[in-house]
Image (spheres, rainbow, N blue to C red):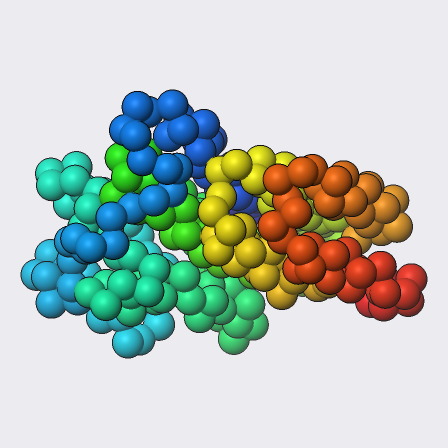
Length: 289
């Protein structure tokens, strides 16, 4: 058990979150733009949606979409999708707002799926043990969607929604690690590994930097996708900023204001302006709470 807690440090989890936030190490756009397909980046063919329906997926063991998925469900879903896409192609993946599969995609993105990690009625050892499994499953699924995007079987919008889900997920994990650190006695060496001073803020800053970095490449988005991405930022950034020290907030604000001056981001007005204005209204007291 000691080895488990040693691996589950804030820094290790942050590295996993950054990797997931950055598309598991795969760019969502650059390879597509030069693929020679003749299609605009991110434009899937809506007129021929072949994504699998719930009934089709159920034949391969996909859990029902109308209930919360457990960690085991999430791992199984990742394995099922990996097997099917390898055998048949990425066209069958659940799609955002698809009449055929949109309900499954909504379940994939649901914050209910990771509420387990915030549930203090669940043993903390069990919750910590399952972090890597959950992150691995999500990284596998996100990689499939990025591959679907490269082959024009998916929009960027699926990637955007995955980022929105991750924006809501990261603070839950950092809260869990803080909870774990506080639950051990001062003499317990596990506390040292889980609750290093400042690690949580540094980790969160790195994750937010990754989210902001996608705004610096507006060419990878169409207007609707770009505005949806900023909508997710508007919904989550105030919560993030309240957790960060002043120097981190100032640095991230500088990054956002730099994005604001990029010509390609003019399509985001007024959403980006509203986000920056909202973050600037946070008082030092609010930001420290």
